[in-house]
Amino acid sequence: MRNKNHTLTLWIIASMIIGIIVGECIHWIYPQADAALIGSYFKILTSIFLRLVQMIIAPLVITTLIVGIAKMGNLQSVGRVGGRSLLWFFSASLASLLLGLLLVNYFQPGAALKLDMHTIDTQSASELLGKTQSFSIQNFVEHLFPKSIFEALASNEILQIVIFSIFFGVALTQFGEKGIGIVTMLDNLSKVILILVGYVMWFAPLGVFGGITAIIATKGLGILGVYGYYIATFYVGIGILWILLLSVGYVILRKRLFLLLGHLKNPLIIAFSTTSSEAVFPKLSEELEKFGCRKKIVSFTLPLGYSFNLDGSMMYMTFASIFIAQAYQIHLDLGTQITMLLVLMLTSKGIAGVPRASLVVVAATCSMFNIPVEGIALILPIDHFCDMGRAMTNVLGNGLATSAIDRWEKE
Image (spheres, rainbow, N blue to C red):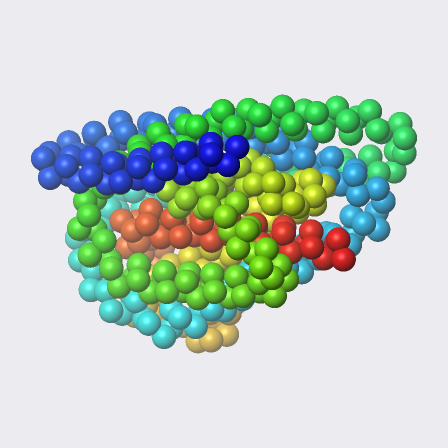
């Protein structure tokens, strides 16, 4: 199995390199419009891979989470693990938000980047902004609880599926021995889905190749130079956040942290390449169990993490929203910035698996604080590259959280 994982990693890395080469060739040979059209054809490969992953996300979450809660045995265990999980999630999210706030105010990337407004893709921005009406605190709370589990499953609403699974799993713990058959059936179903996951993951190199080729063909490697300062400051923040997370992880896991990072290697690469945390959810579950985390802990904690533990997304949205304000020379006092961060924390739940979804949340938050939402167009050209770090950090945070909680429960 380790050799297969190693082979998959090599294929993914090779796909990234080939995608960069092919994309840059297309960008240089063809006019911009033709290069964008050709790139859209390559992007079909990424869409196929992500759709295959999305196909198995809902059944995997609902089976593993219900089984994980049911195997806890009693409400006390569920409450203890849930409490520890939420404590980690909100502590990590708050640390990420505050770190991002400090860095974006120190580096001032919005003031340093002298962007030409005539080059903004206003059409893409307006299409994006048309989706922001559904994002508000009231709508978020209403959206939290599903009207129908079948509707939630059909639309892959992870947060709603998590809520239903928690209620169902808790009910099973109270059903006694009569519920053993249901738990066994769901447990076996989750194992079949994990076999299916192995097949789907072999499509990852194609997805990576298509996504990288498309973005380079459309924007070219030169896009990195245009927004280099913004990207550099963002990744400085991501780097510091990684050091913070890994330091806490080492305190809890000691030398086993390095073994964990070996298991997280493939999920991190896939998340970085596809800009989707959701794309690696099945693989992450599998690798955490191989690392030694108990299935019931993984099944309970990881789905919760995908809704509440978005460390990379928190950093990303902090940089993006305050960058737009800086670009328009809008002064925000400390109290206003902190309020913005709290709003971002509330409205960002459940977006981990959706590339570009962070932009929708940022646009909605900006409109609440009288920041021109048209500023979203300023970061559209580099959103893909920042999304890479965001998705990879989300995966690292959830892997560490699950491993830490499993260690605490064993003690």
